[in-house]
Length: 220
Image (cartoon, rainbow, N blue to C red; front, side, top):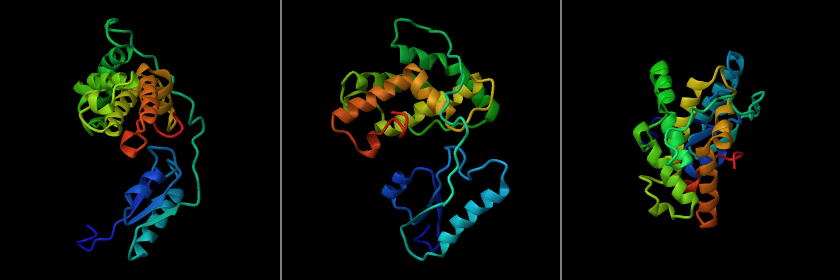
């Protein structure tokens, strides 16, 4: 679009990712994930964010990366979601793989409720147990290239995360804080524990590149 003469600007939620991608113009906003304009129900605040972003369009060349001067924290942001996991289906399976299969019905309920999903970067819901099994192997010391992942670890982990967080919304009895489902996933599920162990194994093997990042900052 820039080459065609159309100036672009983006709102950035992860500053170090944006530094690496070097888009033409970006405004980093230190807001909870899922709230790109900061404060729900506060049009004046949201307008300030948009005006700050659009002001970057006055820069003829880039890359430009600026920080929005206000930070938004979600009360109870890091408190995990209160969410009961379904019982085990097959005790002969790895606990994380069995857990992922058990959440399929909840994922489908949430999909039917909203009509949309963030899952699909590398796979659909049918492939989630196999992705989890690949991360079990990585956590056990198998090289990422030999573990059976269909893509880089980062993209596969994003699909697993989306599957779990969307399933959790169907199981929870309240609207969670911005990062509550993420905290629940990484610290209160078998698969979250596997991803944290896989991250440690990848780092121990010298894989510190962006595409080997499977756990968000703050959830390690």
